[in-house]
Length: 100
Ligand SMILES: [Ca+2]
Ligand SMILES: [Ca+2]
Image 1 (cartoon, rainbow, N blue to C red):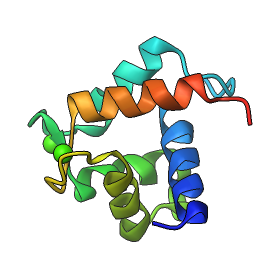
Image 2 (cartoon, rainbow, N blue to C red):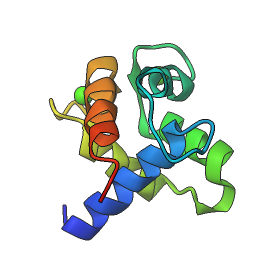
Image 3 (cartoon, protein in one colour):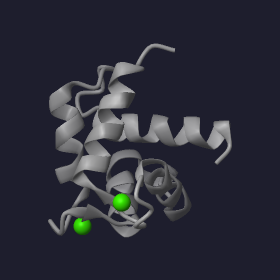
Image 4 (cartoon, rainbow, N blue to C red):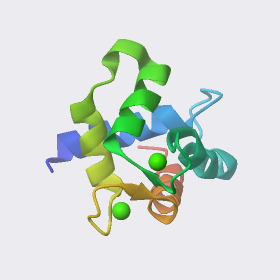
């Protein structure tokens, strides 16, 4: 993954998680994002689910390609889906690096 794609994916996760759009990811938001995206409650976020969550948040900017890249960014065990621990640890890392 190129640096630019990685940056973009991080920004998309951040936009998704930042429910009140104040530019800050709180710990509550970091944990809530998983339940927001895991639409069927299966315990993992698939590309389909993330695409739908993106569409709800950013509308036309959402695409399956973007969702797949975002999943790759978080998917530490390379299962092709994002589990709760993967999601939370990535979001907390994002939250701690908010200032560029
Ligand atoms: Ca799911
Ligand atoms: Ca995974």
